[in-house]
Each structure stands twice: as structure tokens, then as C-alpha cells.
Image (cartoon, rainbow, N blue to C red; front, side, top):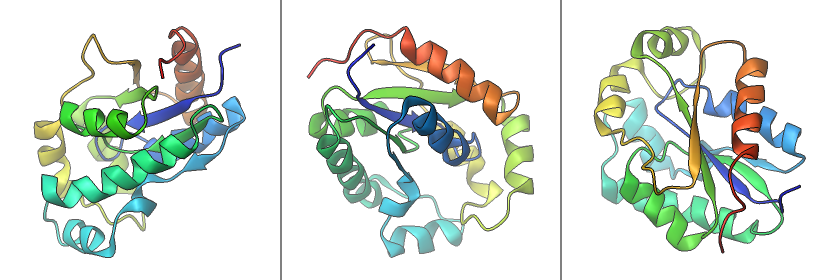
Length: 172
């Protein structure tokens, strides 16, 4: 069994980070943190208005998530974070070496359909194009796996746990 470590559940809006994250955490027996809770109110207001965040908006948010992950090093945890660009993942790794990424991936039509049916979330479907335009999938040198988001949350979580179990232990 691997030492508990921190998994970052990443992907564009609507892929199920907030659904899969807690299920994966429960499966792994570690705490879950909702990445959206780390956003300052100004970021939430900006996205609610349909305005994409810029990198200056994201840096404090990423640093807060990275700090949480750092504090959980060796204890384990799961946190959701879009982590769309390599530079965002590099920033997280700079604060929390050893984290791994679970990229929830799917086609735009499926994800847009899911976004259209969810209620009470600040991210409008109008920002989905900007999310896909920003997305840089995991590089071959990045610790992590991509999992398709088709199927039920339980099926996705099972695929994720299996795929993550094949990764080598994270380096610190």
C-alpha cells in the first residue's frame, strides 16, 4: 500500500471534480477539500459575472490550495482544483512536492450537458469555451493520470482509484 499522499482532481468546469473528489477521498480514507472554497470573494464574483479569471486572480487561490496540500503531505488528501495550465500545476508542486493529479477528461458536449443541469454553481456554461482553450493536458513528465468522465460517479471513481493505484509513490 502506498503512503497516503495528496491527489489533485483537475479538469475543466463540469467534469465532476466536486462529485468525484469526495467519493475518491472516501474510497482512499483521506480528507477532501473543495477547491472552490479557496477562491476569494472577488474571484467568485468575477466568474459569476461570466468573466474568466486571469493568472493574477489565480495565483493566491493556487497558493492556498498548495498550502493545504503541503500541510497534508504524508497524511493524504484529495482536493479539487481546475489546474488547467502546466504553470498552475507547477505552482502547486512548488508548494506541495509529491502531489499527483487526476485529470477528469471528457468531450465538450457531455460536459456542457452536465453543466446545464447543475444548480447553484457560480460557473456559467458560457465560460466552458475559455476553459477548454486554457486546458493543457498532463505532460508525460507530470505525476498523474487522465480518466474519462463518462458513466456514473461510482464508475468514474472506481476507474480513478484503479488508475491512481498504478502510479509510483510520489517523490518528496
